[in-house]
Image (cartoon, rainbow, N blue to C red):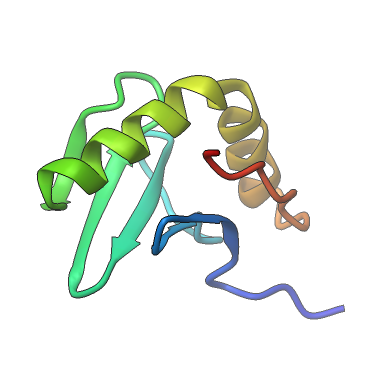
Length: 91
């Protein structure tokens, strides 16, 4: 079975949340919205790199706060090259 290197684990309001295999460093996820993208720490929810429009960032942070344990679990799975689990979108 081939595992995608760019799996999208959630999508809501035009925002795609991805977690990459072979990513290293602080546990994080990638949020993409149009031409914007940001790398966000799972632990602190701080932007580590990039930027998002204010409203998109607020939605991403709300979603991540609600799903932090699922993000942590997916980070562990990604480091083990196991398939990632989808995470419920923001309503």
